[in-house]
Image 1 (tube, rainbow, N blue to C red):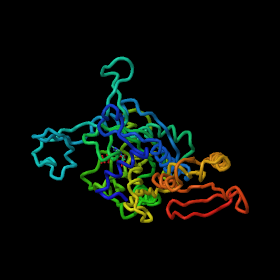
Image 2: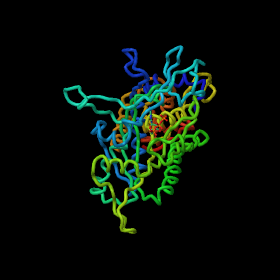
Image 3: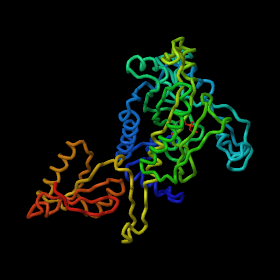
Image 4: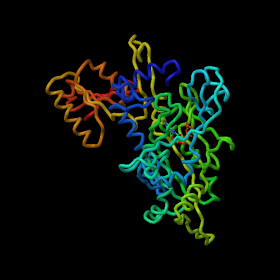
Length: 429
Ligand code: ATP
């Protein structure tokens, strides 16, 4: 786990090993935006795939969707985003730095101790234009959340998927918010990815399903190997609820800078479908067989962030050993990341760069890749250094091909090295 005084080391590691680095770097960056490098993108893809598997593939009652980033601007009027998707912006009257008032310890003072201005409501939606003419008629928004694409497709999904209440719709995709104070690496950026699922239920079952999703989403992070001590639930007080919410509980992680939200589970009531019915004039009701009445379903929404989830997983899995894992005096880093999220399933390493060893190693690589594994092949440098390189990015297994692999009664065997225990065993290919 990364301690607060280790953040610099962690950030340096993330850059050095191609996980995360500042975006647009050759032009001096762009306020708190980040790229995922070759290792980071693999982990991020796997995290999303794992979420999709748990939420969609492993269930009969949830289906997927992929809707666009730019939707008809009426969507955002109906959802309340044009009017209510705001943060209270205040300005330090001395330094003129800007802050979100609800994030200040004292709402009347900046972190520098100066008085701040009266709050102004600042809308977080990014605006752009569709088509060649930049006028009021062509204004569109980059979505501030992925779930609206789900609500406006509610009837399409109901008509095409043979799902019945209770059922859910899941989507993963980019969202955009013109945040006043982005920061803390990928924790808060203006462009980020969300994993959202809208679960449609009857009003009478809403609170039971809410409890179910709070518990099951918390467990998802525990199952990913995050230390339960670093996870907690935070129930929003009634007066702090978002405009659409009947109740919200966040899953929080103990980041090196303090507790922060990973995911919010909200009871959105029938707010969204009612609004879309009103604004579109299209019927959003379903028929209740039991009561023989039509009703607008309620919605329980677990809304998580891909970037925050990955950041928490990385911070929790990262271990730095000043004197090496076996106390040999050299700094070593271990990323004890869940095997399902590691960038590579395994590394294949010929002990030395000799034709016969390389040939056997490459055959093994081909075999493993045909099985769908992501394999790192590395034939150069000392074997110890190659192991450490894999430990640093969390590759769970290394297969080493040595001279014993080629001859005698050990012919056709390889050494399997385990990332966490560093134990080595000889096994048949
Ligand atoms: P916060 O209070 O931190 O601004 P929020 O409550 O507005 O977050 P939600 O609207 O509930 O966030 O969005 C669901 C999830 O999307 C969050 O739990 C988080 O993981 C992710 N998310 C939201 N805003 C950002 C952002 N600016 N950068 C990265 N991830 C974000």
